[in-house]
Amino acid sequence: MKQSFVRLTVLTAGVIILLILIACGIPSYPYLYPPEAIGGGRTGFVHDSDNDPNVFIGYEVFYRFYSTDPGAVGGGQAEQDMQLYFTSSFRISSIVYADESSSYNYGFRRAYIEPGGETPPQLLLETADINTTFTVELILDDASDNEIEFSYNGDDYFVRRSVTDSDDNHISFLGDYDYDNDSDLVASGLDELNIYVAFYAVPYGIDPETLATLYANGNSEGMEYIGSFQL
Image 1 (tube, rainbow, N blue to C red):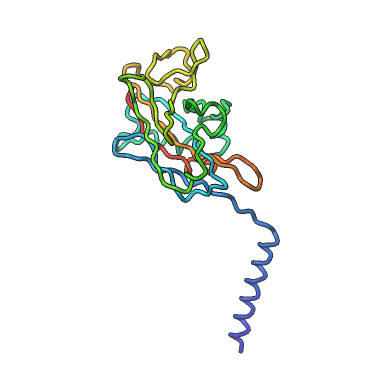
Image 2: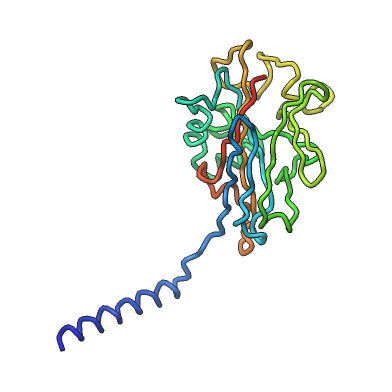
């Protein structure tokens, strides 16, 4: 009899706690599933089909320069820096809107994607594609177009630096570098004879209830280092 009373008491307490939690309205937050790097010496990512089309919209792409291979086995400096400097949603959004943050000051920048333009997200996905799996691969075309580019849904996109020339055009990664004035060469210790660029894919969405913008779930755990090029 005593054991039955104890079980009933525990069960009743559990129900009461559950009702209290429901009444308090503890919010649930939409989740952005990060992409997966292609790997194998290629630069790009595979989209995760688990993303909710009501939340997920597209991708932002960030970059940072290095003087040594940022993805080298035993080093992984790009991955380490991403985890170190992207610890809040502000540190991510500050790069999108060219504000100040430790990650921005440390040399991370938002790539300019044409024809994506300035409005987030740079790569806007077709709604029908969000819950499918597909691959985006960045190609270093230094033979003809002198560009870093990729294709999505039959369209060609060009990935350029955040800085602009005298005509306000965004500069190609395969163009000239002004080490004294270019704002995206902030990080110290760059070797002008050895320069790499690392890329990061950042999921972007909108909370359907609050209409708040979502970047990589607010920290580096939702981002992905997708590879680099030696320039």
